[in-house]
Length: 103
Length: 103
DNA sequence: CAATTATGTTAGTTGACACTTACGTAAGTC
DNA sequence: GACTTACGTAAGTGTCAACTAACATAATTG
Image 1 (cartoon, rainbow over the protein chains, first blue to last red):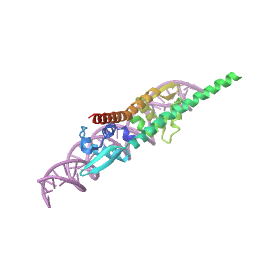
Image 2 (cartoon, rainbow over the protein chains, first blue to last red):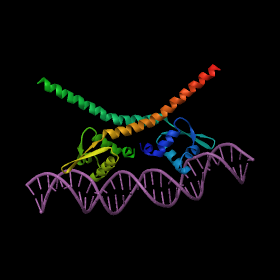
Image 3 (cartoon, each protein chain N blue to C red):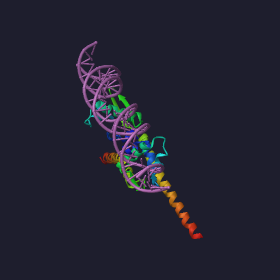
């Protein structure tokens, strides 16, 4: 979650979602220095959000759809947990109404 | 995004999703001190994620579904942006295949 | 109005974080 | 093997974030 909270890291993720990119090309998209991006990539990698593949002197990065999907599911469960409860409350309310009528 | 990245704040949000709660009762759910929760509540309020209502000496908090939904939409756009592009690329690939066949 | 209850605010501490500069390193190139 | 390329890593810095302890404030109660 915290890896994704950072706007720059979200941008990086978007860049390497559909295609592999070497670290240098990723860094060139941003105004900050290359090491800064390198550190962001490490955070993303430690979070399991990107994979790294070495090709000669280059390191190619790519988003890992499975992990991203996992975060997505986690958040959707978070939103839906509440919807679930609201639904149950609505049903309980419904039952109360019916009982009142029965009396 | 950063307001939600904090696990404790997510827990707070869950607590006050379906029902209003006074600050003290929220704080009693956690091991940290009450001021700490008060500060988290301020962060959430500044992010527009919770509303505050005063009732005597108490302050009742509740999650704001509209803002939460906004964050949700923002993230879903984030995931889907890429799906969108992948879809477009798949279609472009499809067109290329068809053109090749035509020749 | 003094005492109590429920809560926010301030000051200070500790640690994390995003960044830069300088350096290290592994793989190709002459 | 020296040089270059494409990187990561280490050290240092300023800022922010989460927390605690102590204090301030507003409403309520006797």
